[in-house]
Amino acid sequence: MTTFTIGEHDFLLDGRPHRILSGAIHYFRIHPDQWADRIHKARLMGLNTIETYVAWNAHEPVEGQWSWEGGLDLAAFLKAVADEGMHAIVRPAPYICAEWDNGGLPAWLFGEKAAGVRRDEPVFMAAVQAYLRRVYEVIEPLQIHHGGPVILVQIENEYGAYGSDPEYLRKLVDITSSAGITVPLTTVDQPEDGMLAAGSLPGLLRTGSFGSRSPERLATLRRHQPTGPLMCMEYWNGWFDDWGTPHHTTDAEASAADLDALLGSGASVNLYMLCGGTNFGLTNGANDKGTYEPIVTSYDYDAPLDEAGHPTAKYWAFREVIGRYTELPGEVPPGSSPAPVLDSPFSAGIDLLDAVEASGTWARRDHLPTMDEMGQFRGQAVYRTRIEPRADAELSVAEVRDRALVLIDGSLVGALDRARKVCSVALPAGSHELTLLVEDQGRVDYGPRLGEPKGLIGPAVLRPGGAGEPVEITDWSYLPVPGDPRPLLSGEPVCGRAARDGRPVLRRGELAVAEPADLFLDTGGWGAGVVWFNEVCLGRFWDLGPQRTLYVPSPLVRTGPNDVVVLDLHPRAGARIATLAEPILDSPIAG
View 1 (tube, rainbow, N blue to C red):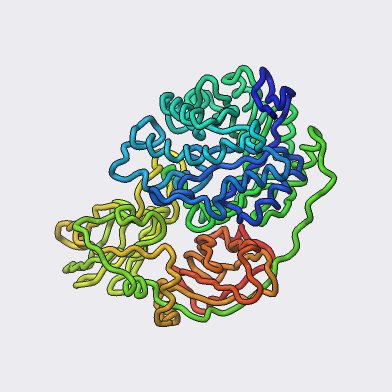
View 2: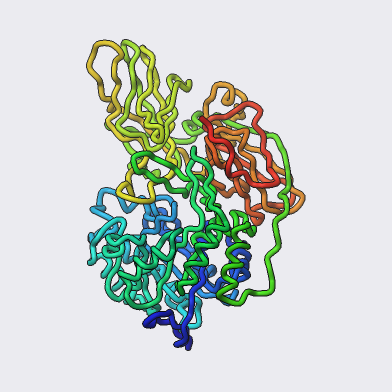
């Protein structure tokens, strides 16, 4: 039986000192047919371990509706790691951050019955226990002493940056241990004294998360972890992007030099990320430290393997450094080649709002409901009411989460925008139908705003331009936009009219491909919205930048015609479906 334990100074594999050389690959951000390729390239770089989070809200987006299917098959991913002869680290949290929607916590946790998260609160802990038991049913038989790849399991995630409830951490440990998890348990925090003190318990191995000044950060970690191995559980070798800010990169040689200093100290490491992958669907998170910053669809992260799994300059620089501390395989991965360049027109389209209204049934409330109250945890919703200002007026809401198109009698007149702190719009006098199409752009994944509801936050007030008192609007009808709106395309094609008057549109076309290959879908001629490729939601696009292309994994691509559906909130005349030879993640930022 193989053993993996923690010694006085080292990790011990069958009693012998062992250094973990790990890379992060999130199975839920990579197409499952590409798992083996990314894992193999990790081993060719000199790594011996793969680390992954588990995203609770991906597996259970609706309470009680659980899935291990397809790209969520954690057991299959861990077996792919084992097939490559590598070890695995699993971090089931329940909170993961990871620039992922709501930090991985399901939105339904924050309903009326929930009293608090990430602390010892009965409702939350009951849900966490049910979640972790499901995950540990997969992990337990795949621990290293059972012949599987799993060598470490993490308790919570950077908890010292959020809370300080030791009883909560103890209960997580008890749940983990009672599920038969006997490999060493770890915690991770940024190397700050307060965080390291609050984020762990005696008996758990503290690890660090940082991306520079490694010797200094390891010294801080050692003060809080006097014995046992030192490990950077998240060596930040790149960074993520927000809509409207420049694409982030880090210098390959500088990162490699710091990695050399880390390994030269004898520490173990997990590269965050080795291959970042993609925020498919509407799974991107957001940050809000005074300004809301939604994260783009690509999670390329400027990692050693890019979003499409190709080695970058950072891969080769890191491989050279790692080769100073372990024997490298003789095989090296191939380089990349240009992707097919294709072009095709849209063949059909419909006015989105007309189609949604024709397919659904309006509900009414005597207050401004959130999307969460509608049971719409991601995507979009339509709000409608009638207003009768005697003079020009201003509509204002307490908060918009996260962007809302404002239409008067069906014509677009403005937008409410959380990121730009725009919570009001001017409206004309007279009797009008007021419609708002609200878009969730990603739930906050870090800090005290975890779990906040989406949609419009009241009160909604009509403020007269001249004399008169503000009036709260309380009579609202609402209609969630279907999470998969593609069936709406069976309606009348009115794409041309929608593009001319600026109303949102749902478009469809076909892209002919000679043979399956990775594609980079060019969104440069589009406005903002969501794309489906052969029934799979690729994610969001926005001409705000910096991301211009959407990655289409080759397993989604068919020989011959491929179905492309685009929901565009700001359609342009002449838009087409096109692909580029290379990805563009750093296009100019729109003003």
